[in-house]
Image 1 (cartoon, rainbow, N blue to C red):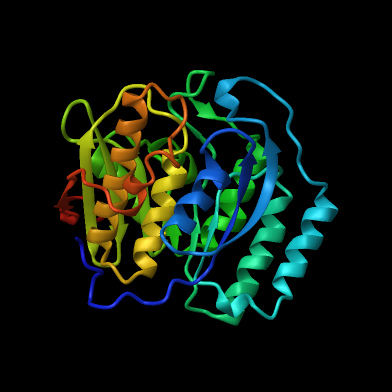
Image 2 (cartoon, one colour):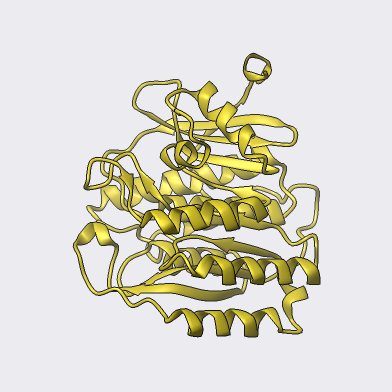
Length: 300
């Protein structure tokens, strides 16, 4: 059994999750909430949009709350006397650009109640492999709102390599380019998911933090289900809150995602099998190696 870093594990505080909700499948808020609750965190969940399933499974109805209603519920939460109980905040997919302003105010209110509460922004903007051939899959105004209103507030940002390139206006085709772009964002920690790997047929997750950069690399699995970015963001934050150092938090989060994807694909599932394979979320058996990444060559 793996022991918590640094001895006894601290009490697990609630996490505020602000992202999309699907009826079927394990993406975004649905899978993220399950994973966080399975490892012991209560979740406050504020949906930004309701979908029947991931858009990759076909176009369908989108229900976005009216801006005035979303603003009102965010204001209610910001005025809650219980904000100080929160251990962390995660934001992901936005249903409309106007939501970013209300979310930013809520994040600031949480920080005012407890400045030590970490905010993780998962900037869900697009990727290299979308149905349109790669690019933004949210309106440009939404992407700009996330970039301008939310990313600057975040302690941790978790873009994929496409999103990192879009946020920074840089080309990200190598590990060194990903490292340089991540540093240019200026956030305390940037976790680049699906970062350019050194080995062929591999996937890398590159964490750039205050004590240096570290990469976790494992074999790529063809045609993985959606939702891996949401999951690794949540598990990394949970590890961070548990007191793990950056490398160990990255290793454990990467191993859980890799194992859950592998088990889901092996069973022919088109969604991550959170309920059936939940032990992978709690304590993965898969081994993922990490390595330190030298930064001297990319410093200006």
